[in-house]
Length: 287
Ligand SMILES: CC(=O)O[C@H](CC(=O)[O-])C[N+](C)(C)C
Image 1: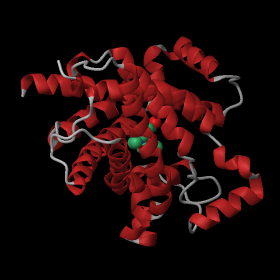
Image 2: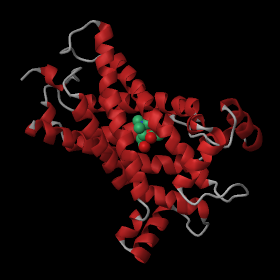
Image 3: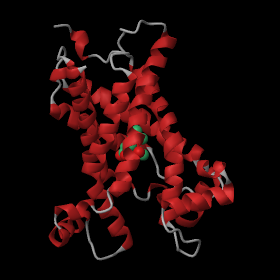
Image 4: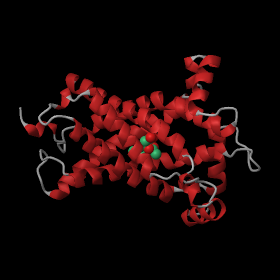
């Protein structure tokens, strides 16, 4: 058995399989992470819970386990294509990196190539994610002293009416500034931790679930450690966001929401990578 088998090869996964497994990963991410999102929103909008755990247990007591998944359809419909594009973009980024390096398709990816591919994955993802985040932000501030929206379609019509097609892409630079470094950390951490955890020579299909879960969970934490969330939609430009936030709320405001994001990051992304790897294995075994 050759040690090369554990190394990440450049073009071993097709674009279609990357896309489909990414979509499956996105669904797994929402299934594991949605209860934490629900707890975050409930804690932000009510002071009756002291901790996320209390919020989760009280929700289960009142509405059963299914209560943790109330309202999950929209995030599921959003995350599935976003993660499909993200993993497809990661695969394409690897192929581009290898092409430019001049090494053969069968070569092992260097750390630099993995990091490049990770950052590249944020580009197609952003094209889809920016309009979705724009609509989400409008819905989150709906009725709070400004315009009220009946739902996503209403918010989308408002954007188009007031700013045209370009209005959907307000905040693109901010999304890229968050997601390019975030994705470099995400995929870089995943590949490096996975490589460190598995014994040399382990065939791909024998990589342990624990290694995938630990590497995936840490990748999610690494992503959020570098991706500082900025409140898009309220500001004319990127400079405005930083000046306004730091002046009014201090530098700490730049890290607002990082606690709940981290709490969700490990389980959600462990599930995501597990979904990706297991669906890839299933696809590889049938075609
Ligand atoms: C901001 C975001 O969507 O992060 C993803 C992980 C998560 O916790 O949702 C990772 N990625 C940006 C690579 C899609």
